[in-house]
Image (cartoon, rainbow, N blue to C red; front, side, top):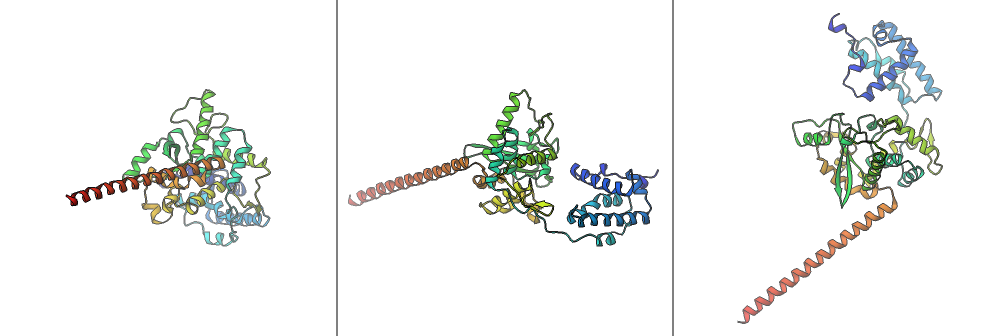
Length: 378
């Protein structure tokens, strides 16, 4: 068989595992509708027959939208796997997509526009006795990480301790390869001719760092041996906590928490269960503190505009900007008050030092003037 007729499968692509999983899932739904059992059957289907199947499948999806069983915004996503597979197997011109896309319903304005409030997050933390779950909520509230970060390797070697006002704060390397360490990331970021990849640093507040450390101590006390490749969060079976696990944990916590409510609008809620944390972090870093907005984009893993491509702040530079938002990101009122008191004490100490310096300067000036006067009287 010639190379050009070999089937190229999604599993062979350089896409992320999460994207492969989504494409295969959406393809599976179409295969079930069309009666295909394998990718080969799909790719070998005659053009006219496949065109007809795709059009009819679109009509089927539109009916589901009209029955409020599917979001209109989901329909374009349903065809991404099919498009990729056809394009990668030399059939990119076989299907006329414009007639299919003409059937797509008008997209709807997304819900989930609100962020979790600090008070709501505090209630979530108070409602659970599980130290892992407390650490997990703090982790999401501090970093604002996408739920997908838990689908990628998230290991002990991706944590680096930073220091702020005598407190420890973890730097977390998100979307790192399984064999990528924080040291390797730092080295690449210092070299202008080397691409840093998709990994980026986010950070934990002192409060979140303390809870995460207590969670680690609890695991070690139970006999777990930590290495560089130990997952930061684990299931009861010792495997890395997945994005699905995270959703289930948050749903379970919210389900038993009547004080924290969300308003359902259509098929979605006004606060997305995980993205609500991200929106809060985004708002605090960009609006409620004097953080450099371009660095804030980096901390959140955004790649907007030319700065997203060419701006390469170091871990320390990102952390310096993050520190400006630590007080607002802190969940506990007591911990936030401690930070405020420490800040006032530091400012008072600085003011007293300035007063002492001014007094010393005044004293020195008086001595000089006295010496000059003595010299003139000689």
